[in-house]
Image (cartoon, rainbow, N blue to C red; front, side, top):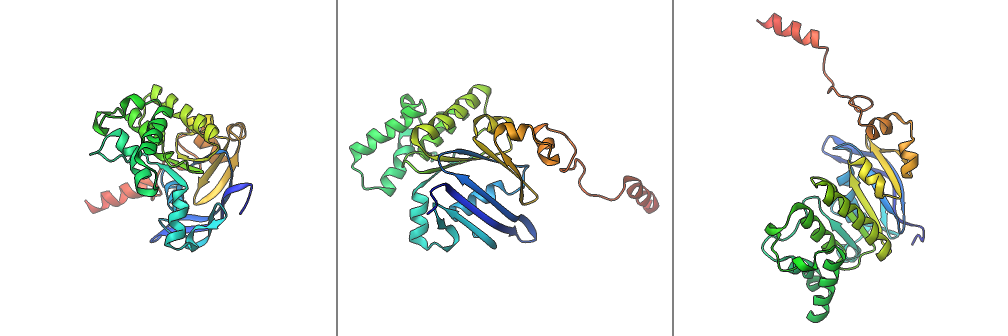
Length: 270
């Protein structure tokens, strides 16, 4: 098992039918850090999370988590690997018909043999960590968007995982909730001594909290570095993405024949 890297990805290829999403992606994520995986929609960020969790298998290349090659694990091995992962889904993913407290207690009951009094204390401690112990009796439909995201974070850390993955954690939040979530990701990562993976298209918010950032474009890693290095990068894709330019390597216009040719053909059909 590698002592330096918790995630090791080599020459990773994956496609959905004819849509080649990843085309030889390679990267390393060091332990104990916050890593941001950035790129435009459809660049393969969420697919990468599925490959890390073993939901799908690479068509070529390898994915290793904690030194274990994910696609070679049997059911028991994959279960054990996932037991050491926490996941905060973009939409929260809370169970809608049970309370906030029960959402946090659920994985503890399902995946451990802890007595109920210990589960009770642990669940309240996780909610305390995200500032929502006082909301433990509320139902998910009584929560604001920011509160629901914080409950989802509390559930992600319920079993004290070594790796926490965040799928678009900043999407759809108001400025106050954004600040709270950003602070929680940083403080919990440091307090729990875990590794965090943020998948997002929110460049500035991700660079604010991440120790290291990775840019994926056209299925490959095109740039990586610290926040300062990324902001100073002159790579055309990174520059366009960071500065929100409408045109560049990611073209504003979808490929098409010249407009004049289209109009001529339209006139000819009349």
